[in-house]
Amino acid sequence: MTSGPSCTNKRLVIMAQTRSARGGSSGGNGAGEARIGAGARVRGRIAGDGALTVEGRVEGDIALRGELTVAEGGEVRADTIEVETLVVSGTVDGELRVSGVVHATAGSRVRGNVTGGGTLALDDGAQFAGRIDAEFDLPAELMGSSGGTSGGRRGDRR
Image 1 (tube, rainbow, N blue to C red):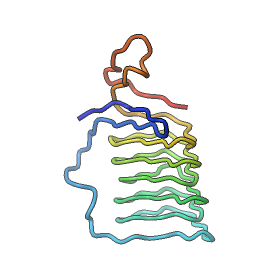
Image 2: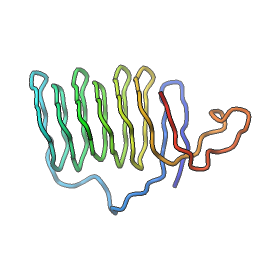
Image 3: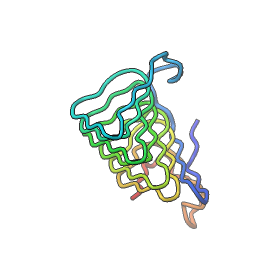
């Protein structure tokens, strides 16, 4: 099902058409949760199953079958970040390949192109610089006087 972006006073939400080759649910994989603490700095590739919370700094690619949370004060700089769900309260810089939800909270900074078939939610006060590569229909209030839909047009938000 495809839903267009919707604007509220506090959040921009874009729900894209899912084109996943994988079936099944992303949750319930039985994997644990890991944490990189506020004083830690990690360089190198991180891969695995389960959830990861970054409170410190990570420099390197991340590939997770699970949720990546970048806490307030946390920072991730990577060429590629490939996860099922991404929640950003800190800073993320890199190409984002997310099959589920990308949620940037107020005060967060996200820089990079987003691809995937999920939902992008930007809270009021979140900063986003990049391209959104997904198929979606724009609501009438974003289309101006034409009142139509994008017909699967790719979206840019800067």
